[in-house]
Length: 167
Image (cartoon, rainbow, N blue to C red; front, side, top):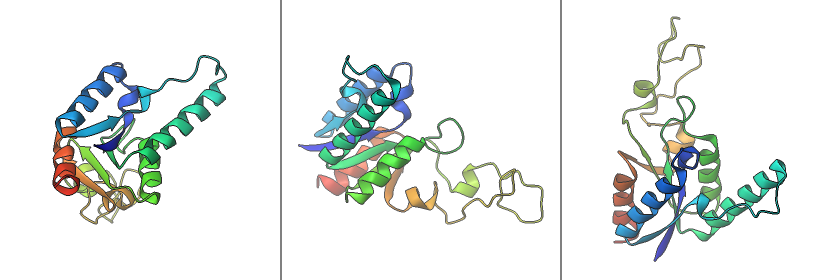
């Protein structure tokens, strides 16, 4: 059975553990074993916050290395872009040569999805005048190129996984 690491800001939800169980159950429907970051807890003896953070970091890297692929929730988190921790995890998995899959609720390119509020002469810029990428990708090219992105939810992304890895 292929193992898939479940990346995303879901671990910060009020129902983070229940969400993890839902995602893992969905993986099971597709014949996959979901690996969720909250499957393991910081040992009780580690009480110093920086040591806890280090433990979590190392545990997540271990799960990613153990996984055959990564499935990431790439919906905006605390702003207009995906969770920065999720972006790091995808980069790490890419460096390991893992297949990458993701999902977003809303389709369209960056220019279509992000607010172009610049009132200057050049179109396609945010409120601060920074260029919004116009490659037709739904996210920054460093995610939009290596990650197979489904519009919808985890189920739609798992359909891609089934087509590409389980066929």
